[in-house]
Length: 447
Image (cartoon, rainbow, N blue to C red):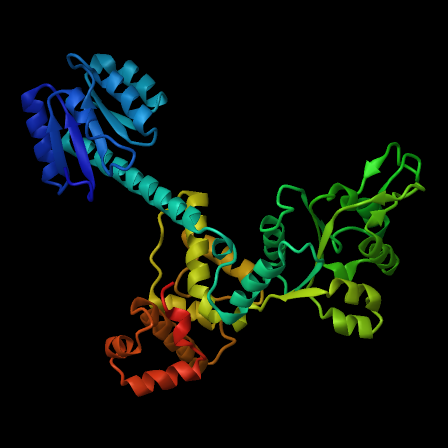
């Protein structure tokens, strides 16, 4: 049995019915493997088998209902179509409720059989494709599978995380909206010895000033009107783990003084309390503005900025790492296909070139949202975002040329001679193009 193509296992103990059904399907180009009993057919059923099963219900020994039960034990998503006589329709309907894909009543016109099998095969293909996508996503181990990209900027982000993750040092993450600051913070947590502790996130810009202090430091019962009982704050709750403060630039000035004290003394006092509570917490702060400039303007405490800026991770905007867009887009497409149960759509080179030419003001988040719309069929060739026309034609051509050279270098294991031959250009010209785009041969040598 060829397991590389869509196939149908056809089971019927009536020779004439088996022959005519097989002929009907084969005339439609469907590969059929006929059996006159259910037992031998089960030997070919596996979770990775790409076909579907069409079986009669009334058969000696193992009947169609027992076959359905056994198939579902092997793979609950493998479609089984039941062929039943008129008197067995109620039983077939119950079988559909129990997991059968469909049923066909005898005698049925050939087009009914072809239609049911076609729909079942399409369902099976989608199930197997999504499983393969899930396995591919799960195969990405370590940080490469979390922070996707091959540009120098992203390589620097990954190497910095690997270098400081387990040191416990407080970190300041800088980057525009949508670049993935919380993802970097989670990687700092998950690749450290604190990974078994809590990761506690707080957006400083999302809470009013009257609430954020209590959220951070907690309070004792009676500390203020409405404080009926003691509440543990985010800092204390993150003990043994990581506290992530997003949009730190939005933190009220008065609270910045208190946070500075926490960072220096590693202790906290709840509102309304006198007890100093030691805390073992790592603080990772994120900002979308230049805190150095903000501190010089008096908009952010300078001493807190220097205390946070012991280790600084700068995430480049997507427009400055367009070479990462093909990898990122494919990654987001795979995730979206699994999320929505859709097949992986084809992405033509022209579309990828257009995506690389955009400036993406929403950065990686915007690209991820676009990928979801793409999978759902909510985009077309004329889809444009306000950022799509921000680059000139020569810039788009250069972005596409760079992508083609990078892909060819990867395919040829960084061998310049082979790459030049494939691209149909002299080696010297290829070297000049690599120099123009800042491409280092060593970056494409297989590890």
